[in-house]
Each structure stands twice: as structure tokens, then as C-alpha cells.
Image (cartoon, rainbow, N blue to C red; front, side):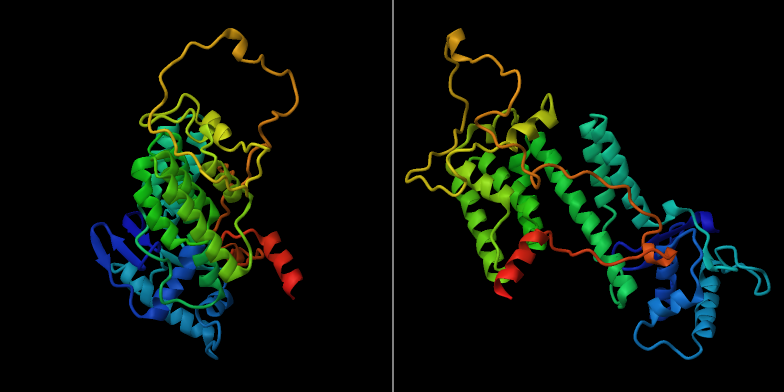
Length: 371
């Protein structure tokens, strides 16, 4: 039966056998299953299950209670199994209880593998397929994971999965910007900025999509929104990438729309990102000209340009008009994703990542200044 089982934890916890949904029983029994799903294919000690499911008030006879809930799970996951026959889906080993299912049967595992596959396709230059892989992986989400479960184990797993989803959403938006789909992306980014209000990379993409759609004033208003939010809530200002983009939008920097088609895919997505991420050294990003120019709605008519107007390329040295790529604007590398989903269950140190992508060194400096 294990080959036909499917489990969903990216949203309300559910299990399926073929097309039939399984009643997983009471809350604590579902929590025991969730712990096993977080370490699919690896045994989990009874003491770890007790600590995860009852973090504040563990029962005195914890191992017996876990055994009772495991028996209940075996009945619903293997209804045809004889009571005296060893469990095939959940078995007891010397190291603890082991959930024996195909990892692909768990939606969270398929999500992480889909993100990895998208990264490999993007590195190979197959950008359209990378976008399709990311979209398919993100479509597996149906809500916040582990709703109703409390404790450090579930909080850490929840924060980690939410962070992975946020990075995947940012990367998908980056690929759409590279492909010239900025007009259709604006509405999607409105929702994402509302869901993740302090993720600066999403704000950067939102401002850029607005500007490329001919909405310069709205792009500048989006910057004022994030600037006010960060200063009021955290006592800090936007990071270098956002400040730089703000200044370039004020100056109507032509490189913000260079090499980006309205539709279709650019000849070199990496070249388009490199052009976007370069910031002129002068004037400063914080300058405010009295009359900012509006972005061009269409390219100017072609004009004859003397050959001498284009300077020869420099052999070496930095461009006088650029200060290098901005770290937050570039697509961050995908790190290899650990297994199992919650590393602490395998004896590794763990801690929930912050759901806010605010620059930590700047927070530390603010705390030093203000005590």
C-alpha cells in the first residue's frame, strides 16, 4: 500500500491512498505522523517524537503514548494488515520509528526537488524550463505548513519551508523580469509584497516591474512605502540595492530598460541582469533632481552615429559609470537542500531562520547605536 500513499504538509495536513483521502485521527496522532514525515526514510527516536509533540508538558508514560498513536496510524495507513503482522509503512527499528514511503509521496520533498531541478536548468541556460519547474513546485503549496502544531520542531520546519518558498517566488519573479514579462508581473508582486512586506528583493522587483511598465511615479511611491516601514518598525533604512534602484529610477537610467524585451526571452538573461545591477557612481543614489525625467514609452528613432562616437572597449579596469553588481538584486545561489526536512531530527543543530529578509548587520549596528 505504501506505493499508493501520498502526504500533504504544505498546507492542511492530509493523506491519500490513490484517490481516497484518509482520516488521520486526532491532533496528537497527526502530529506524530508529521514528525515522521519530516524525517521520511530515517528512524526517529521515541524521545524525539515526545519532545516534538509535547514540547511543554510531556506525558509521564511518553513512549507508551507514542506507541498508541503509532498503532492508530498503522490502522489507517495499512487497513488490511493483520494486528500481529509487523508494520510495513511504519516500522520499529533499534533507532526508533521509521516511515517507509517513497520520498516523492511527500509534497514538501517534491517541492524541494523541483526547486533544485529549476536551479540546474537555469544554470544550463534552459530558462523557460526553469520557470516551468519553479511554477510546478510552487503550485504544491496550499497554505502554511503544520497549522495547529506548536513547539520548536514544527516552528523551525515551518519557517524553513516558508523561507524556501519565498526564495523560489523571488527567483521566479526574476526569471519573468528577464523575459520581459514585467507588465503581467506587477499584479503578482503586489500580492507578494503584501505577504512578505520586508523582503527587499521583492520590493526591488516590484519597483523595477513598475518602472519598466512606464509607471515611474508608482515605482517611487513603492520605495517610499518600504523606507517608511523599515524606519518605523526597525529603525533602519532600505539596503544598498533598493537605494541604488531608487536613485536610478529618479534619473530615468536607460540601463533599467536596456536589453529587456517586452515579450519573449533575452538573448542572454545573465547579461540583462548584469546591466540592470550596475549603478552609476555619480550622482549619489540619494540625490533628488528637481525634475525627474519620465521613462521613455518607446525607443527613439534610429539615428546615424559616427564611428568615433563609440569609444573602444577598455582592456581592463572598472567602468567609470559603474560600481559593480548589487548583491541583493542578483539571483542568490541555490544551496544544496539538506535531508531530512528538519535536520535536528537527525542529530544536527537547528534553528529557525528569520522569515524577514532584513540585513542582519544593519540591525546589529542599529542596536549598538540605540542600546
